[in-house]
Amino acid sequence: MYTLNCKGRLLAVDKPLVMGIMNTTPDSFYAGSRYAEADVLKQAERMINDGAAILDIGGQSTRPGSERISIEEELKRVTGSIRAIHQRFPEIILSIDTFQSRVAAEAVAAGASIVNDVSAGSIDDAMIPTVASLQVPYVLMHLKGTLETLKQEAMYENLVREVLDFFIQQVSLCRKAGIKDIILDPGFGFGKNTPQNLMLLKNLSVLDMLACPILVGLSRKTTIWKTLGITPDEALNGTTVLNTISLLNGAHILRVHDVKEAMETIKLWQAYRQA
Image (tube, rainbow, N blue to C red; front, side, top):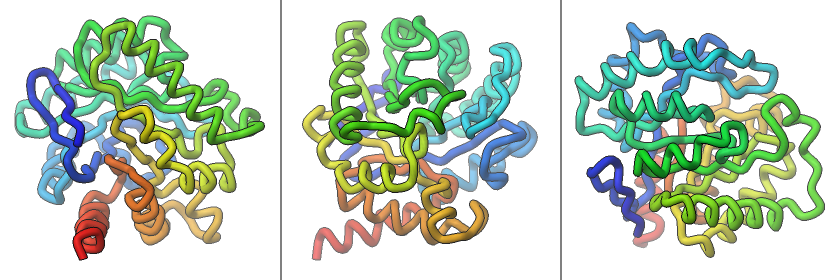
């Protein structure tokens, strides 16, 4: 069991949780996750009713080839939505999906209480000290190279060992900076090809030695739809399969586009465990 201190509110991770993806971007890889600000309250309510424990709001797409936007544009995309959701649904934990420290700080001021950084502090040197000063949980994601060079970086001598070593180093840096609650995201699809993603998934439990919750984000990703010869729109069933494997291998948080189906997956996994 883990406990995350989200700005004074304790989030118990005593069973798998679902993080719902809400992208206020026009170019995320899955069109079903793109929400205009006018729609965010309706979508937030649906995800909350479906069982999401966390809503993850992002304004910068990180899909391959996506356009890097200015900090001002990112703030414009996320802060209004975070403030509106926090005011309407104060009980829900909100996460800001960003690699910019200024966006993280202003999002937390608007109502977010987790920072989810795909770069684990490698893009903005101020991110780790900023999160430490904010005293909120920090999602560290494994990223080799940069967002611009992801396809070229899928080369490893020993993938599992390199991911583990990366987390050992970054967790140590975060602890020294004063960050108390850390969540690990292996970074499926980020600088990893399909066989590598599946190998990492198979060995997910090695991350247990770091004593941090493990977040898995495989929802509708390329590994699923390219393997099956379908599109992201058709990848819900495949997502459920890989989410099930994730739970069996030790995942604590499922980051998904489809909250209801992920909650059903968790309920069946719990029933299986208790049988």
